[in-house]
Image (cartoon, rainbow, N blue to C red; front, side):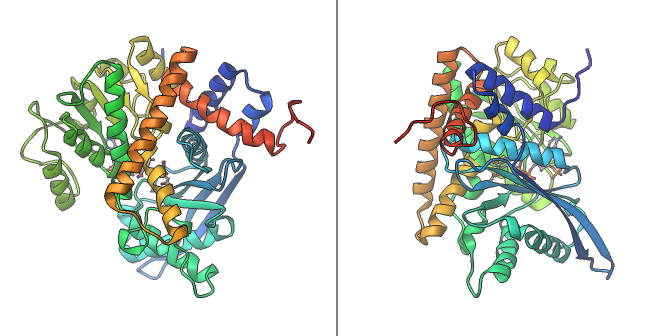
Amino acid sequence: MAEKTLNPFEIVQLQVKKACDELGENEAVRKILSVPEKVMEVNIPVEMDNGTTRIFTGYRVQHNTSAGPTKGGIRFHPKVNKDEVKALATWMTFKCRVMDLPYGGAKGGIIVEPKELSIRELERLARGYAKSIAQIIGERVDIPAPDVNTNGQVMSWMVDEYSLLRGVGQTLPAVFTGKPVEFDGCLGRTEATGYGVAIIAREASKLKDLEMSGVRFAVQGFGNVGSHTAMYAEEMGAKVVAISDIDACLINEKGLDVKALMKYMKENRTISGYPKADEINRDEIFKQECDIFAPCALENAITTRNVEQIKADIIVEGANGPTTPEAENELLKRGVLIVPDILANAGGVTVSYFEWVQNLHNYYWSFEEVQEKQERKMVAAFKSVVEMMKAKNVDMRKAAYMIAIERLATPMRLRGWFKDGTYKRA
Ligand SMILES: NC(=O)C1=CN([C@@H]2O[C@H](COP(=O)(O)OP(=O)(O)OC[C@H]3O[C@@H](n4cnc5c(N)ncnc54)[C@H](OP(=O)(O)O)[C@@H]3O)[C@@H](O)[C@H]2O)C=CC1
Ligand SMILES: O=C(O)CCC(=O)C(=O)O
């Protein structure tokens, strides 16, 4: 049967409903968490190098502020749309709460193909976006960060623009995270999401009686998240047998040399043509024999079109929203362990939180300290999700949502956002 196409926002609403139903949560909690608090749409005029003006549409969505300021990346991509950003902001809320970070979720995006812009045009766009959303962000309000096609350079332009607008002579670095280390960034942030995915993959293997050393690993997407996931998985002893990007899929039965491939990618901007592997069609990644598959590209990668092909015992979601609900049901029926995005890729926002804390205190930590703190936080979150999964006999995604929802319902109740008769007089 053809899959009913749900957009990512409908998917996250379904995920929230399922977890609220399982918890028997107050209906008001589901209603509040099913919609974002604020959606801002901006139209940014950008002067192009040839003197013409183009208007770019962007969004900043803030989903829930009950637990603290909102937090989440900014995506530059031609397929960005309002519902996608709303979904990504909602996932951020649950991600932050499952990690016990004092944040709610937000996300931003601009509809743009950044490859078509010159570096100066990109800078003007980044500055224009920062200026457009300046009224609703701030170090205690909403703290953006990088996501697909944005990086430390883009964050630096935005900090500069925001500081010019608001700073009365000061630089305000804590408003954005994911900055370069040389400009108030945090050691280990660039690697953090992939490092976290690999840590979670290692913990998940233990549940399936597998050892990370020798495990067969496949990764879809070779950008920031995919490349660091593969690099740390290899460092932990996994054999990375397949990697894909937008152009190709590379396979090597003996294991790819991930660092060499990262170097090749940096020089060639594609993995295609890398000599020490066999090159096949991009989407053949789904068919590869492996124990662990990490989708690290975009939403809706694993669907009913390819779910039959997947051979892995464990899926660790490096990307946000890579598995559709129908594909997930198929995989769960087959006993595949799916570690959900809100846990698996939470290393990025966790180290962004560390960056924010360091910026606010103007006191900086070593790389080892950051990674050690990250690992501790991720292993603890993984354990609490597994405990919930076992206690309630639910799948891992539902367990992660249940933990996050409990941690959201309490501050919302205490703040009086809904009434359920539990108010206690002094
Ligand atoms: N960066 C971070 O810290 C975090 C990112 N994430 C999520 O991880 C995912 C990846 O983000 P990130 O690595 O930062 O983004 P990047 O832009 O660095 O990397 C994504 C890569 O995936 C490639 N890609 C796109 N479509 C496909 C496809 N069908 N098959 C194979 N490769 C494909 C892209 O190619 P091309 O550019 O040519 O299109 C790009 O190289 C996103 O879902 C993001 O939201 C989650 C948590 C934190
Ligand atoms: O680092 C951050 O604050 C946000 C990261 C992000 O956008 C994500 O986890 O999807």
